[in-house]
Every structure is written in structure tokens, then in C-alpha cells.
Image (cartoon, rainbow, N blue to C red; front, side, top):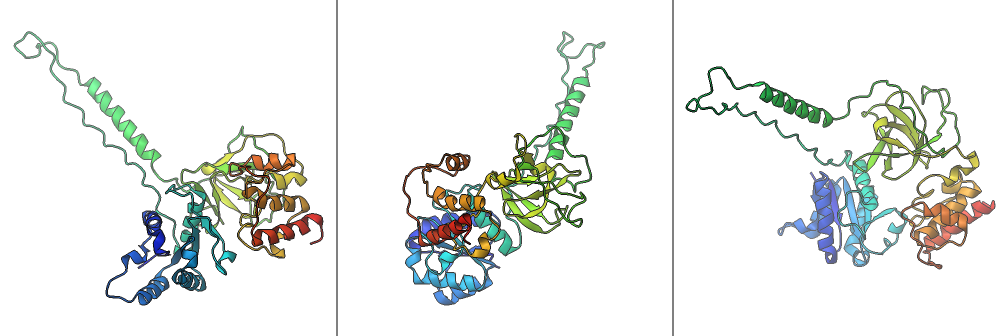
Length: 391
């Protein structure tokens, strides 16, 4: 059974081999036409493999964007709702695929925490119905068996004196110490247990990134939810799931990537309610939450300036609709509009915009002029209308 089908141009075969190997390492069964049987028709095999696969990765490049075969395979995958788009050089997917979000892998060299690669894995998890295989935890080395005690040297022809017997106490203590270390290592490597109610950690401060908001009684045990603490994840996997309930068996409603800020508040128990900048709300295991140090809360109007990440993440690749921007106030629309220019490396003259985007590692100001695509120009105009109050 094939999990993932890969469509590409033969000009990019070496680069695609790296992608196929990484998908296979993540635990998915991969097929690409490097494995085409010599006795089968190309078209028959491709149609069969796309139909049986759970996801289809299309690798766009300057060459594949011109390939009728790649376009046809992408169209089949899109119609079957299993299309995962990637780009390995500076190219936009051709029409009509430029209306669908894609993951940029031009600067990816196999890093597991690359933002574009994380997008690919998240799509595969959703389409294939399971998470990628995590890196195997190291197994603690077995405790060495203690050596038998040696007799003390003496002048009694190689035998211990009759009134001095070798002591076993040091070896017994060493053996107990080794066993204790092995047990501690084993315990640390065990998966986190189902959380039980425990008091929330105290003594932590955070920057308030959003004003308090009421929540329904069915969503939380607290009568009022005040998302007043900014936080980031502390997860070696590079992302943490947001779940619908306080259990690892609850449905996944969203994800938070490494470095992405979100909101929470002090709560009892080991599952905390969190909220992302896009409004996604759910529960996250407390051990993966690290509160951000900071000062007092800003006024509610400043909420749009605090999330660490884009207000509209795909505004450079997807044509926005009035429904996409309906919930933005003028200040948020201004930030969302200038995000498009910031991604291009635009050097802002406005000190407020320089300071805002300067806090993000992805912003690299390099030019006083930038060239926008037709999609970006249309999105800038739409956001400008919201910003000026004409939308």
C-alpha cells in the first residue's frame, strides 16, 4: 500500500531523491517513477499509484512547471483532494495551482525543523491519518556487572592473611549506584503519563498579548477565560499539537510550531487552554508550554501588534477574499498588508513597522523597492480597503 506518491520533472531527479528519502524516513511508504516496472505502461502505473496513494507530493520547479505530465498528475491529485505542493526553486506553481498554498523547499537541505518541511509533514499527517515516526529515543546501556573482589596482596605465599578477608562493601555500593542510575535513565525515557490534576506552576511572569475574553461553560472549568500570558513551545519535535480535550486521545485541532507565539493563562492541572493568533483554541500539555518573560499587559487595542508570526500566513501565495479579512480591524489590516512587503525584504521608513517586523528572525531588510506578483498586488489592495474603512 502506497502512502505518498511523488510527481516531479526528471531534471530534478537528484533533488527529489532527497525528498523521497526524507518522507520514507518519516515512516511513510513512498512511490516515485524511479521505481517504474519495465513491463508496465507509464500512464497505467501513474494513474494506479496516484489513485491508491493517500497523499501526492508535487515538486514544482522551473522544469516541472513546463511539464504536461507533472501538470496532469497534479490535476489528478487535486481532484482527489490529496495534493501537497512544494517548490524547490524560485518559481510559483502554474495556473490553476497557484491558488493553492505550497511549501518552499528551495533552501531545505534535509533539516527536520525547516519551516517548509514542517508544512509538508503536517499535510502528510492529515492526509495519511497518522503522525510521522519520531526519532528513536536512546536506550540506556545495561549496567556492567561488578568484578569479583580481588584478594589483598600479602606475604603468605599469594594467599590472604587468615585474619584479613577482602571486603565486599565497596563493590555492593558500586552495584547499587549503577542500578540507581539505570533506573533513573529508564524513568526519564518513558512517555509522559496521562496527566492528573496538579496545581499550576507559580512565580512565572509573561507579556500579555491579548485582552481577556469570556468563554462558554462547556469549553473550560473556569467561568472566564483571560488569555493574558504569551508563550512559546518547548518541544524537541519542533511542534506541539493543540487538542480538543484534555487527553492525548482527543482530536487534534491545530499545531504550534517552534518559535510561534500563542496565548494562555494560569490554570490548574497539566492541560492548559491555549489560543493561537488565528483564533484556534484548545488544550496543550503543560510541560511543552514555556511562558515568555515580560512586563504588564498592553491595552486591548495593542493586541494586533503582539503575535510572533504572520496575521495572514499565505497572503503572498493565495488570493484573499473579503471573508478572509472581515475580522481584521484597521491596525491589523495595516500589519497584514505590510507583511507582504516584509517577506520581500522591504526596508521600511516607518519606525513603527521597522520595530515590529525587526523582532522576527525571518525579516531581512535588503531593498528600498520590491516587485509584487499579481496575487500580492490584489491582496494589498484588499487589505488597504479594510485599513481605510472602505471595505
